[in-house]
Every structure is written in structure tokens, then in C-alpha cells.
Image 1 (cartoon, rainbow, N blue to C red):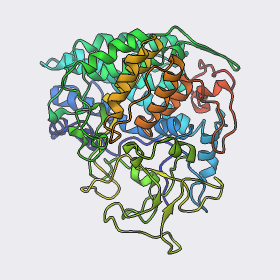
Image 2: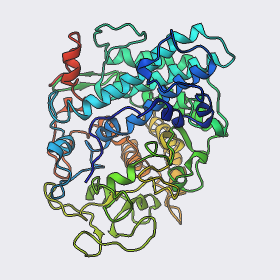
Image 3: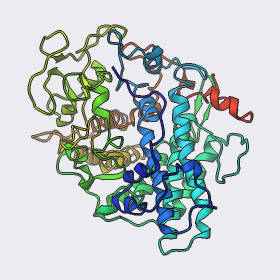
Image 4: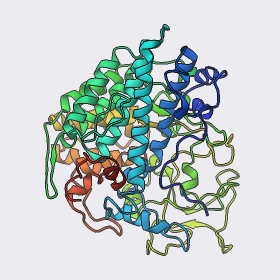
Length: 517
């Protein structure tokens, strides 16, 4: 049985990375050598637009790695996902159990494993961005300023992920190799904010379909809206025993969200599933996406992580990721969005024919897990939000992944409006999403208090955004990340930040550890 890598690896080849942006960038690399990024220097590269475009593709390609360690830490540390041990499968040195129970340390299987992987992936993207930004002033072509804006936006997004996961990190904007101390989390926040506000003016509002997936004004606004939604956390002060929240930025969150909602090119998809299918590159809802392709080594592998061995293949899935009963049961049975969780008798997702477990009995996914240390093949309902691509090559599916889509923008604006006391406006925004999830409609109750609306909006984020990598942020913002759930006991407040991995502490003597570790 093959499990997903605990630490993310870079793209196998430089040429393959270009496919992760768009066909235009693929065409731009036809005359490139096969040298990996580490062999590329300003002295032997960046001589024309085609070479710049191929380097830009490498900065984009690093986004794929965010769906391994960063994504897993955003989901499996919460009540949305659990990876139980199934016989000899999925123990993996205890990494998944430690992740779900939030018991990591800087030197543990998680802290120096997925934690280090999340750090390395983001800083590799930043390093690639800095290398290209230093070279661009020496090359002249019409699209140069747009590419500068794209690269700065990508770098800002990598910093957004680091700020979210680790708090303050070194701010690096040059290629000079040197030890650097951590900037404060608030300083990183302000750096990202300034970068996005600066690049937004130059970025296009949209790209044509051939360039789908490149950075836009909407992508900038989506990152900003999320930052402002979480500003109290991101600019607050954390000690081992307490979090002092920073200033709220609710009005700024609304402004950024409304810029997206006022753009007629962004629309809620007709159906909830449209934004996740293999043809979701045409969804009018997706804003900041990671491109995938049904090609060897370039596809989305989410179905492999959760499906049973008999439900797809070859190769056979890994039968790992599941969700907790309390999460599955939180959904209304009539909610269309619950259909992205598989429970009950199961079929092969390609043939739609019933399948059996390894013992020959009909495969049934239970919603409960009796013991996370010795779960059966069928215990635990399974995430299946990004369905199989009929054109898949082995485990490689062509579904794009949206880090931000319009459905979340509605919820960001709703939460911010409610915090400002505009509860009726907030609930109307939420009802816009619920209208496509229920038939007949099931709008939220009217006339509720601000506190009650806050609870409803928090729940709605679970229903709308399950398994999209947002649950950790939501639980932290609502003060629930340390709660007990499933097999997890209550955890301390300092766990809202991951420890700086010991590998990084050893490599940089100027780094200081997060409180509590």
C-alpha cells in the first residue's frame, strides 16, 4: 500500500512544471534545455521572454506542493479529517495520529516532517520568485510588468501560507544567502498586504481560457479578504497560555470581497459540484486555482487518499483519509453538499458497480470509527469532493483545485457584515449559497441575534468549504481549535501555530521558536 508522501517533493522535471500553468507557457519552453531550476542562473538564462515565461512556470508549479503538507496540516489537525490506522496501513510512525491529536513538537514526526515540508515548499516558491524578480529588470518585453506583478503576488501567497501556519517568518526579497531572523507575524501581514495592494493595479482582471490559472486582480482580492477576515489572529500576540487578538479589519474584508462580487465574470456556479469536477477550469466561481492535468505526475491525487482499494484503479487507492461522524452528521440530510462525503454501500467510481472489501463482503462505509488505532477497511465516511476524471492517467486527475472561489467570498463578506452588526445582510448572503444546496430552499431563520448568526455562519463554512483546506483557520478564528473531538483531547492555545521545524532551527541560528514549544 502506498501512502501520500509526508514531505513534499518538487516537480520531477523542469519541463513538466510548465504544464501546471497553461498551454501558453508550455509552448514557451520548446527550446529549453532540460536543466533543473538549480542550474539556471542570470548568466545562462533569462535572455528573452520565452525563458522568463518558463521560469515563471516554475514559481507557479510550486503551488502543487501546497496540497500535500500544508493542506494536510490544515485538515487532519481538525474535526474534518482523520487518518485511522487500518491493519498494517496508515500507521506511518504515528504521524497521522500525532497530527490529528495536535501533540507535535519541533523534533517530532509531524514537526520535522509535514511541518518542515510546508515550510520548505513555501520558501522554495519564494526563492524561485526572488530569483526571477532579480533577473527581470535586465530583460525587456511588453508583458514584463505584468509578469513582475504575477511573481510578487505568488510570493505574497507563499508568505500568506507561512504566516498562517507558523506566524512570523523571515521576510526574504533577495537571492542573497544569509541567515535572517524572524519578522513578527504582524510585520509579515503588513508585507503581504502591501505587496498585494501594489500588484493588484497591474494584474489583469482576467485571463483568457488558455491562460486560466494565472494571477489576477480577483486572486489578490481573495487573499486580502481572507487576511482581513483573520486579521485579529494574524496580527495578535500569542504566548504559551493566551492569545491577545489584534485589531479587527471587517470593513476591509467586505471591501475586498465586494470587489470580487461586483465583477460580472465571477458568478456562483449553477450547481455546487461544478467547481470541483474535472472540467472545473470553466467554472465561473473559481478565483485562485492550482492547475492540474490528467498526465503522468501532473494530476490531482485526492481520490487516492480517501477511496477504498476497490473503488478505482489501477493503481488502487490508498484507503486512508476519512471524516469524523460529528462532521458528517452536522450536515442536513437534504443538503446537496453532503453528497461529497461517501457513506453507506459503495461502488467503483468509474463503473458505478458495487464493490467488495478484501474479505469479499460488500463494501460499506460507516460514519463511525470505533478505534482509530485499528479501524476496519470500511470505517469512516470518505471525502470525495473532486470526483474522478474520466480522462485520468493512472492516479492523475485533471481537476483543478481552487484555494479561493466565490462561494467562500460570500461567506467572508457575510461573517464580516455580521461582526459589524449587519446580521440581516449577512444571512441573506449565506442564503444565496443555500439556495443551490437545498430543493426546496431552506433559508436560515430571520430575526436571530448576532451571536446566533455567528454560529450559523461558522456552521455554513463547514458545509460549503469542507475539505478545501480552510477548517483549521476557521476553528482558530472561532476559538475552537483546542476543543476535544472524536479521539482528540483538548489542546493548548499555543497549538494554533505550528512549531518552527527543528531542521530549520538548526539551519538558521537566528530563528526563535514559537511560544509553548
